[in-house]
Figure 1: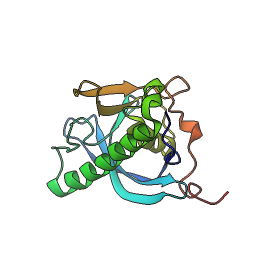
Figure 2 (figure 1 turned 90 degrees about the horizontal axis):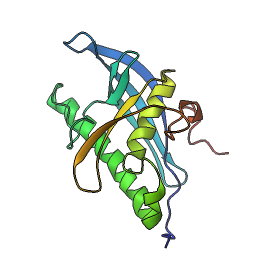
Figure 3 (figure 1 turned 45 degrees about the horizontal axis):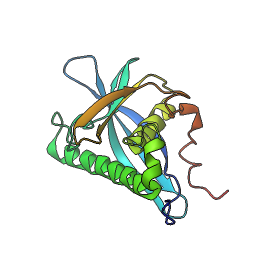
Figure 4 (figure 1 turned 30 degrees about the vertical axis):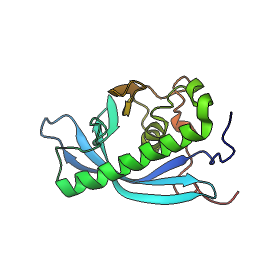
Length: 172
């Protein structure tokens, strides 16, 4: 049975992407971006300075997503706490969607990490990148998993489907 209090789908956009620093391994780099989250008529929030880790041409992921608690232990504790708060927001929104869909949530591929995937794909779109990205989530058995997603029609995360930051949330 469907929950009659279904919230509109959440959408994301990214802007102000900027390189911050190279990781000591010399391969990966930290980037920041502003992320807008919108549920039409319900939520309109902008998160500034969200951190991403990029391995050029290979992989992008939210800093901290590799940890169940969302804390990146390679950065200052204040930045790590702010980042973990954003990851908690994404996970809470994901839980909200799954609760609204009830038993039907099980038929959707990526239901465990949809909000994290959408936010990361919005960042990729803002940077005009199309390479794989990483997500982290608790599976149905309670184990923390990290996986790589290849953007495109089969994954449900198509970078061409994201509105520019300044257009997301505007009245139709």
